[in-house]
Length: 175
Image (cartoon, rainbow, N blue to C red; front, top):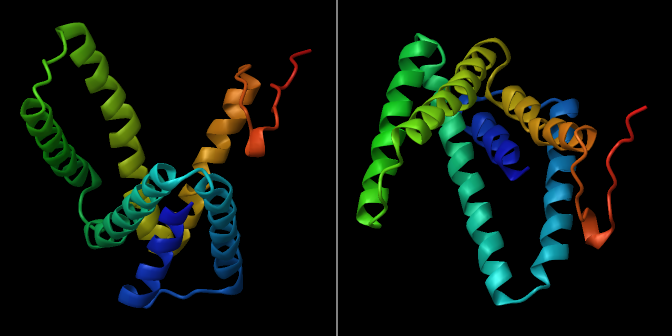
């Protein structure tokens, strides 16, 4: 949730995007949700607090990437996706080699390519087009809703979750 908050704040400061009452209310709700999760999870010791800090720093980086991507939104989205994908794949491959990881077999590599092209490539293309039409802050707040759609989809498909504060969430019953 903090990714959208950082994205909107950076867009407001760097690009002068407006922050109307609806966007501000959405950001405050996202921030409140993040604070609740951190308070609940942060009480679990130093290791957990370090993990939460690492996730928070990652959301800052994603917000920075989202905001800097605004300069690319007016370019051809296919070229931007190709360049960012090539950069990300190269960095990941180098890190894997440095860590001593073995490359995946051809079937797994092809599956990863298809998943990356549809998941990352499609999402980034739509994100850039949305930034063109809506601006950075609004696009970030709309995309922040995606995890809730994913969670609802998982419940519909029968997944179980421990929920918030250990309360069991049961899947939606099919009739």
